[in-house]
Image 1 (cartoon, helix red, strand yellow):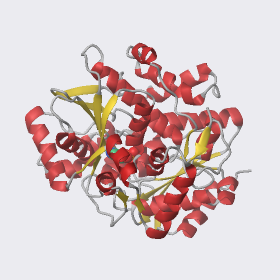
Image 2 (image 1 turned 120 degrees about the vertical axis):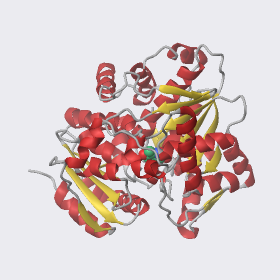
Image 3 (image 1 turned 180 degrees about the vertical axis):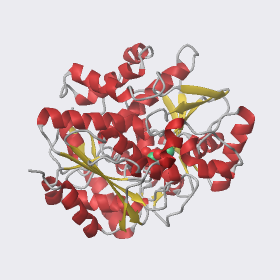
Amino acid sequence: MKFVSTRGNTKNIGFIDAVLMGLANDGGLLVPEKIPQIPADKLKAMEQFTYQELAYEIISYYVDGEIPDNDLKNLIEKSYSTFRDPEVTPVKKVRDNMYVLELFHGPTFAFKDVALQFLGNLYAYISKTTGETINILGATSGDTGASAIEGVRGKEGIRICILHPDGKVSKVQELQMTTVYDKNVLNLAIRGTFDDGQRIIKEIFADLGFKDQYHLRAINSINFARILAQTVYYFYAYFQVAKGRGVKKVNFSVPTGNFGDIFAGYLAKRMGLPVDKLIVATNENNILETFIQDGVYKPGEFLSTYSPSMDIQVASNFERYLYYLVDENPNEVSAFMIQFKSEGKIVVGAEQLRQVKADFVAHGVIGKECLQTISKYYAETNYLLDPHTACGVAAYETCNKDGEVCVTLATAHPAKFNESIELCDIEQSFPEEISQLFDKPQYKEIIDADKDEIACLLKSFFSPSI
Ligand SMILES: *Cc1c(COP(=O)(O)O)cnc(C)c1O
C-alpha cells in the first residue's frame, strides 16, 4: 500500500511516512494509491467482529505490514480501552428505521476521540520505535483540540500546540483544552475564526524548511490516519443495523464541517460497504450543501451557530473527494486548486455534478431547525441530541425516503454544548468528568491570528531539546 498526493508531486510513500507527512509536501492531501476492496465473503465474516477486531482488520489493509501485527493489535486495544462503553461506538435505535451511532463515549465526549486516541498512541509508538521527534501542531473548532491533547498529554517524546478561536468554542470545550497542565501542551487562543487557524497551520506546514526543522506533525483530518480510524465505525454501525434483519443498504447522515467524517464514509463505501445515501448535514455555514446542489464550492462569510464545531467555511478534506471526482487525476485537482486560489471558488462541470449528486445528498440546517429538532426528539423519544447531531437528524428527516434505513452519526455528547441545550429549556445533568472541569485553573495564551507571531512562539516551544 502506497500513498500519493492529490496533486501528484510527492514520491509514493508508505503508511508511517504518510502519517508523519500529514499534509502532502506539494500542498495536496495524501490518499491511498488504490482503495482496497473488501470482498463480500469477507464482509460477511466481519459482521461478528468486535469493534477492536474490525479496526484491526480495516486498518491493516492500509498499514500493510509496516507495524508488526501484534503491535498494531496492542495499539488498537490501548486506544479503545479509554472508552466508557464496551462496544466503543454503540448504535441506538431511536425510531423505526432510524438509528444513531454514538461516537461520544471517549475521554472528551466527541467523535474526535475515536481517531485521536489511535493517532496519539500511533505517534507515541513511532516515536519509541524510530526515535522520531513528534511535535504536533493543530487547529481546532473545539473538539479536535481537546481530543488531541487528551490523546498525547504526558506522553514521552511528544509535544503539542493547539490553536483555537478565542471565545468561539463552547465553555466545556475551552475547559477541556485549557485545564490541562502538562509541560508538553501549549494552548494558543487566537483572535479570529477556525478558518484563520486552519489557514495559518496550513501555511506553516507548507514551509517545508520550518516543518522539517521543528519536526511538525499534523493531527487535523488532513492526516490520513484520522480518516482511516473513522471508516471503522461505518462498518461497525452497518453490521449492527443490518445483520439478521434482512437490511441490504443503509444511509448515513453525517454532521459535516471539514468534510473529514463524511469522507471516511465515502471511503468505506468505496471499499465495498453497502452504503446507500451519504447525507451531508451542515449548519448555516453551508458551502458544502451549495456545492452538492449547484456544483459551486465557494466559501463565504463565517457564521457563528449553535453547532460551533461545524462552523467552518473552508473544508480541508474536500480536496480528497475532488481527487476521486476527477478519476484520480492530480493535474485536474491542481487546476481546481489554482482556480480556487485565484477566483475563490471551484466550479465543476455538468457531468461531474451528476456524479456529486450520485455520491451525496445534502441539507443545510438553520439554527431554529436545529433547536426544534433537539426539542422534538427529547419530547417524543426522550433522546437528547447535541446540536451537531441534531443537524444530522434534521438532514435525515429531509433526505431519507420512507422505508430507507438511516444511521445518524452522533458526533458529540450534549453536555459539551449546554449553551444550545439551555435554549431549548432542557436541563441536563453533566457526567462527572465534565462537571469537575469547572473547578480547575485554565492555561491559555491569547494572541493575534498572525502566522509570523505564531511561528515565533512555536520556535521556542518546539525548539530541539539538547
Ligand atoms: C468536528 C466535528 C464535526 C465535523 O466533523 P468533520 O470531520 O470536520 O466534518 C461535527 N460534529 C462535531 C461534534 C465535531 O466535533
